[in-house]
Every structure is written in C-alpha cells, then in structure tokens.
Length: 479
Ligand SMILES: [Fe+2]
Ligand SMILES: [Fe+2]
Image 1 (cartoon, rainbow, N blue to C red):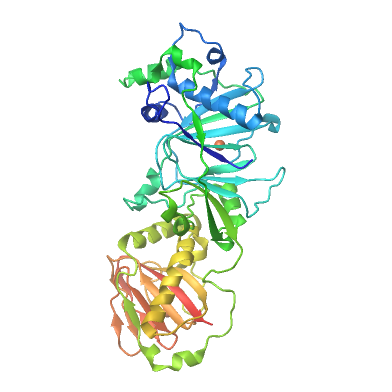
Image 2 (image 1 turned 45 degrees about the vertical axis):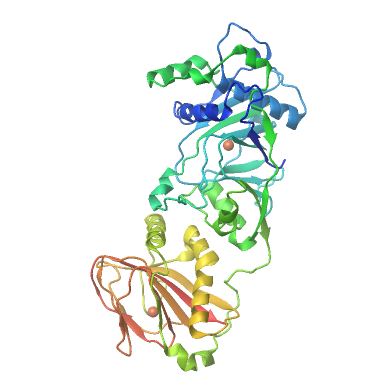
C-alpha cells in the first residue's frame, strides 16, 4: 500500500466549529501526555449516541479518522469486536532518526495515521515500502512527508517510517542549535485487528484533569452531542505528491539500514537541493532514485594531465573570501566533532605528512553537502578563474584537519598529491598556523575563505600558538 495523504477539511459544513482551532488545541493537548503514553480508544459510545454523555472533539477526530480508514482501506464497516484503535501524542523528539515498523502481534494488518499538529519544514516523515518478508532495502518507493497542520499521512505495517532529518536546520533561523528544536507534534492513530494488551482505555477526564491543573481552558475541546451523527472531521484525499529524481548513489540502502538498525544521531541533507524549492507547493514527495551516475565524483583514477599544470596561469593561487558563510563553517565543525566524539580523530591516514583528520565520507551529512553542492562550486571557481573547462574531476581525498596545541600543531613542507588542492578554513579564534608557500607567499587565511593551489606549490603550516584550527581539504584530480 502506497502511503496516502489526506487533509482535514477545516471548513466544517456545519460552520459551527473551526477545525483549525481544534487542531491548534490538540497541539496543546499533545504536551499533556507522557512519551509513549498510549491509550485504547473505545468507539462504542460513538456508534451508539448517548445524549447524556460528555463528548469531545479529540475522540471525535480519532473516531472519524479511524472509521474513514477502515471503510476506505479495508472496505469494512467499523466493528468494535474486530477493529481495535489505539492512539498517542508525540510532541518532542530527540535528534534525529527513529525509523521503525508499526508491527502488531501475529503480523495482523495495521493502518497507522499520523495527524500533524503544526507545520515543520525541517523534519519530514520518511516512509519506505517493504516487500513481504523482505529485509533488503531496495532503492525504490521512498516518500517524504513534511508536517503541515491538519494533514494526515496514512500507511500500513509494511512501511518503514519515522523521523529522518534532512536539514536539521531551520530555514529562517539557521543554527546548529535548532537541531534540538525540530520537534514534530503529532497525533498517531493506529488500527489493528488484534486486541492490544496492557493498554489502558482512554478516559476524557484524565485529559481534562491535566488541562485544568495547568489552568488551560478546555471548553473548545468539548462538543455538542448532536454533532456526533455527522462526520465532523472530513478527510479529503490529496493527490499533489511531487515526484523528485535523485541520483541513487546519494541515497543508498546502507544509509537507510544504518539509520534503522543503529538509530544514530544522523541527518540526511542530501535532498535539500531537490526538495527545498518545492516545499511551498508540496509537502509530500516521492523520491525516485535515478541510477544515472551524474555525481561530480567519478570513479576514474587516471593520472592527471601534468601538461595542464605546465601552463603559467596555474602558477597563480586562487583565494576566494566568504566561500562558506559562518553558519556553514560552524555546522561542519559541529557535525565533525559530533562524529569525532563517537569515533575519534584519525592520525594515520597520511603516511608521510601525518595529519589529525577525519575522512568526510564518514560524516554523512557533511559528505552529502560536499557532493551535492560544494564540489561543483569549487569546480566552477577553478573554471571561471583559470578560464578552462574541466570535463571530469575526481576527488582523491576529502577530509577535515584539526590543528591544536596537544595533537597536530603544524605541517612540514610538502606538495599535495592532486592536480589541485582546495582548502577552506572553518574557524577563527586561533593564533599561528600560517600557510607558508615555498616562494615566501604567506596566507593568513580567513574563516570561510577558499584557497586553491596546485601540486607544484610546495607549502607548510607554521605551528599553532593557541586555539584550534579546522580546515576542510579537497584533493582534486583533473581527468
Ligand atoms: Fe510508527
Ligand atoms: Fe598540503
């Protein structure tokens, strides 16, 4: 079953209630529950109306959504002996991925609906269809659903799903700290054909008691019993799913497997370039992996064209200020140190001129940023500055180096192995570490500044005096 997206009709035909306001109130309710505080919903009183009972829009929404799903997806009428409905709220999430399946005992059919209670453009729900009994992660049928208030995404228990951070940044307020603030507020409604065990039946008084103790006026939640004969929460199917083609190598099955099994603190900003321009008009995306290898990294490892470097124009080093802004620099350091906390820095990658470094390929988020954005930018800087056209380039090495007073302090004179080297300084607040070229030219690099030199340029790095220095380095081979 392909995930289906609905939205709740916010203009009730009765014109008595404003569904938008009620969903806003559900948002407030979401903070009244503990994490994973799941309840069994008893639909009996909603099938047989008891006028003396107290009714509420929360249970009405659950009932209307569940009834709709049972009718539409199972072609059955809601039956209290056959269909079991549970629900819970979610309003905080830890960074970052939490991919999982909603399984029920004996693998009975399950339908899950997620009702988004607010908009969130940075933390989509990832959905991936699995074949029956197939635990391989095929490169097909990925979906990303961005939370939008009043939207519902519905899927079955064969769908691997969960939070899968793409950006981990807020578009308006770009900051690494927002990584912790990309919460998604949800109401989750699950329907199974197996009676769940050890789940308490929901009692409205519990919610009212909690709201009351926080001095929150809950009158908007309470409903006129007359409304129970109507579908208050009408679901309209949305069909504006946007198909997005992405190079398959940007998103391989190992990344998903890793996110599913290891639940790492993990972001994937690979899709940013493909999706960000469509977010206003769509919030549901079908990702189609494209197997044409059009990445900037090519597998060819022919020797570089040394004749190219004999041309005088390449003796000129290139310096481009503000190649990265402060935010990008800070983010790369943040991601790198986060990785380093778990895995440490390596000191043995470069045999003759040892550096304290980390291969960027190991840091998924930064790697995807480099492959999808940075490499092509560097390529065009070289092309525009030297007035050449580079047909193909190969990245021989891509790493971040850390200089400090206790580990690597300096680097002896050497030349690099690649046709061109691009280095970007990621921070300031240190002293020392001047880049000194063989011909006496010394660079006091600025934060975010890009320097490009070639393999004829011998250079060294003077000792650090204090602080820490981070540099992102690309070894670029021209083919
Ligand atoms: Fe789930
Ligand atoms: Fe170097």
